[in-house]
Amino acid sequence: MHAILKKIDEQAQVMGRQVYVVGGAVRDRLLGRQALDIDLAIDRHALVFGHHLARTLPGRFIVLDEGEEVGRLVCQGHVIDLAIFKDKTTGIEDDLRKRDFTMNAMAVSLKQWLMGSQGGDGIIDPCGGRADLAQQIIRLVYDKALEDDPLRILRGFRLQATTGFRLDPAFVELAKEQKRLLARPAAERINTELQLIFDSPRASRIVQAMAESDILAQVCPEIMSGMGVEQPASHHLDVFAHNLAALQAIDDIISQPGHYFPDSEAILAAYLDSGKRRRWLRWAALFHDLGKPHTLATKKGRITFYQHDLVGARLFTQMAKRLRFTNFDIHKVSLFISQHMRPFHLCNIMRQGPVSAKACLRLAKSLGDELPGLFLLAMADSLAGQGELKPQDMEKELASLFSQVHRQVEDHIAPLLAGPPLLNGHDLIGAGLAAGPSFKKILNALQQAQVAGEVEDRAAAFEWLKAYKQ
Image 1 (tube, rainbow, N blue to C red):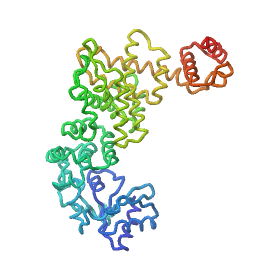
Image 2 (image 1 turned 180 degrees about the vertical axis):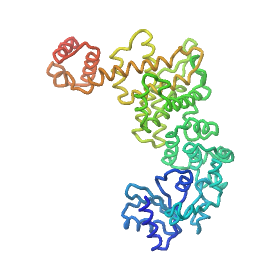
Image 3 (image 1 turned 90 degrees about the vertical axis):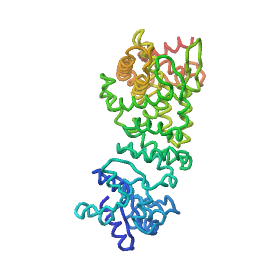
Image 4 (image 1 turned 90 degrees about the horizontal axis):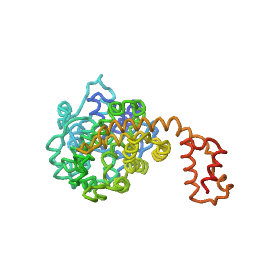
């Protein structure tokens, strides 16, 4: 990155441009962090300058906003955003006074930035950002900052998630008053801020703060349908509060999986090594009971939510499409939501005896590589429900069940699924069966017979098929 910035500085001198490093890179340097991407503010003709840089470095320049002269230079794997001074102001200090938060309203000339500690920090700070960094407070630069860009409402909470700093009460109050302005930003921009929040280990605390300030209701109104929806006596909270508690629980579990699954710590730590998986589980925890208000019924004086898992997955999918989630993320989160009751059903079975190999096979085929995540979610769901009629030792049962299922999968099911099938479609046709949708059902039943030890080889599989046909 240093060599690229040095070439940009040389071109700036040749073309007579004033160039400053601004925003997050300056903040991160003061916090002792490595800045991965750089934002540059340029006194004039930023797009012309960017196109010229793309030819001389070389690199690729993408225009992001022609009217505001904002572009992105991609060079050797690095991303550098360029923009003219905000609102076409003529000086860097006026530019900084139009930025969002004081911690982002600092600048250093590019030449000074390249000199580093040898030339002093050279920080331009007209808004007191350095003092706010020292006090660890997230404060708006000016009163109309949210009106000028309502996305800053979410960005404030995202900065709290990534830094751990506290929000200025004046910002929180203003965000609450102006929350409806969040209808203006594009869904893609809202999605970016939300995903960064859910990537953070502080996600549950931030989402709770967003709920208390009515911001959550503005961006995800679907979740509010659970407010005041009473649950059976195994729960102590309404559906809305239970969902928030499940998010808190999943954050706790992610931070110390071995505390909740003492026999499976290494397995779960390896699974959670993926940031995407941690994010999927947080989304699934918050929305796992989204379907309950829509399936609420009372039968013989008992509250029920039949098929709330499937309904919830469908509702989450609709919401996620509105917020421009990727299809891959939608698939993963909705998978967890749709399946989140299965570990509890298996715990009911386990109380009567060992869980069958066939049940483990069905679960493994449904979840694939995300099987550990399902049990992490179930543990969060259990921890979030502490009603008087909750089964005793529910969390211990879930941990024990995961150990059983994982052993079955590793020892018997994974090798079976990885190997060639004993019979295929041609074999079924040769046995006199007409090709059609029933083939999948037959071959699945054969797999279940294999994993149960009822069929061991190809000859036995043909004998099994004869009996199946009859």
